[in-house]
Length: 244
Image (tube, rainbow, N blue to C red; front, side):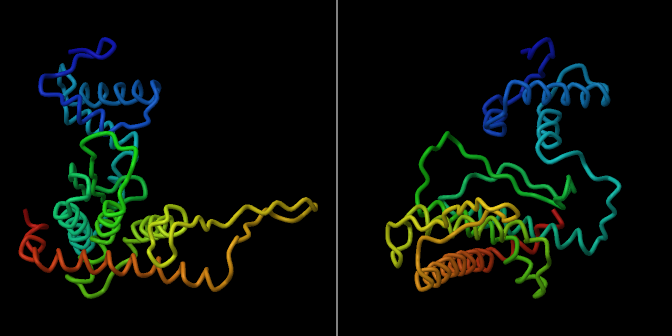
């Protein structure tokens, strides 16, 4: 098997590569193959294997390993439990994508990450699947609370993404029984006078805004409770996670 003259080793899973590179342009794929070829040559191999391709994708998407970043054993343990929480919750929920890879190697701004890959192309997402995604996103923070009783700032991006999804469910997708099927996004307000900035103006009342906030909070609280229930049930697995 070859890719523009670059020999690929047997065992390369094209399906996994396709699922890991959605939206990649031809230039992105060429960059990926060049990166994998360089990794292969540095390690003295003659064919590009799946490990080199996987690492090349990680480098293209998240950046190279931050070997200069010194992380203490204490923080490594927190990161391991955090990622273990994501993985356990995602594995237990039927609507979450299958867990493909878990890493506690720092890349870019991330100290660790858990990768879930869909098994097929999806153009529609069910409400139950979004709820499961919320629970998985909060699995890391919940694991920190359960193990250390003192959560860290490591869940910042997870919380941001969960809040965006929950708010979209309420204001864009009509997935709140309390609010109903209405689109309630803030509309862009253009200012024509020099020196004034662009802004956004809500097309709903303060009362409705409070109800939206309440529904977003409810969705996130329910996801947090789901994650806590799963991690409590599988606490033995979570406790053994960092030492495996």
